[in-house]
Length: 327
Image (cartoon, rainbow, N blue to C red; front, side, top):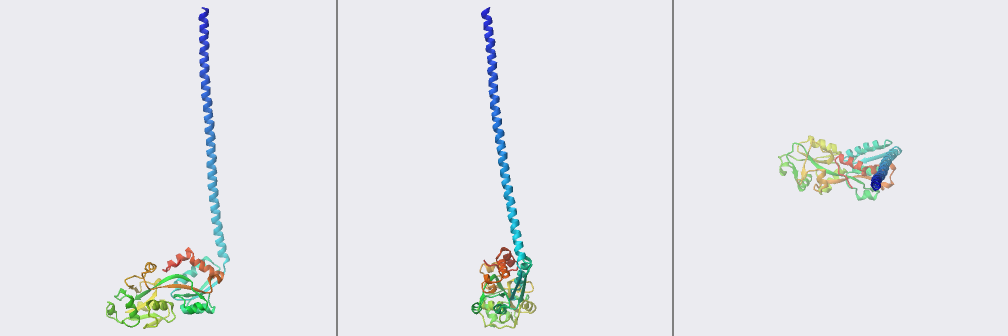
């Protein structure tokens, strides 16, 4: 019997030791889980801090960008307010549309600057420039060597095409370069000779000294050889005369074309900005805003005007009046 009790007691003690072992194992598992949770919480906290830092940096950068933009706008506004004075220009009637558009846009941008333009013809405009009467001489032709020698500087601001126009009732649609030259020199006098209905050709042109006339005759190689029925003193006058005179032909700046006249193809090519840019249309010429001396030597308003013309905004304006921009 004593041995049996001893055995039972031993077994009972052994059984308790097993429970203790199980409890100890469970405690170890709980401790491990607690450690994992602690690490996870720490990691999440770190991620939250990182996200906050990134968002803070992004917000700071956006704020800095907005501040810089505001500073630029304020600086531009202050520059516009500070610039004051006047600009005077005279010259080409073909450049009237461009000059008026530039004057209006520039005065809106710089309210304290006034721009006055007169349209007296290219040669007269350069004479006014060289005599000191105006700040800018507008010329719809390249400057002559004598004008450059006297101090005029050629600043090309755009390229223009010269359109050959006829009365809308004229049946002819196209002329070759040779036919056009022969019409202006008087070798061809009837529309029937160029595949039109028989009718006298009435040759209209600009006055001597006109930039349009000079460029037209030079490009056609008929300088001092033309025979005109009428020599008119403005682009508008040529348009009106051709529109109202049966059988008439004339030449005008590309940017003034409208449906009161019919523009002819030359060598099968229409007078468009795209064709001029591509070099397919042979009647094109520069629009020059000449200064006496380099641009850098001019007054602040004049320098600002040329800066405007070379800007993206200025180039958009030049294109909007039907002209071709220059690089």
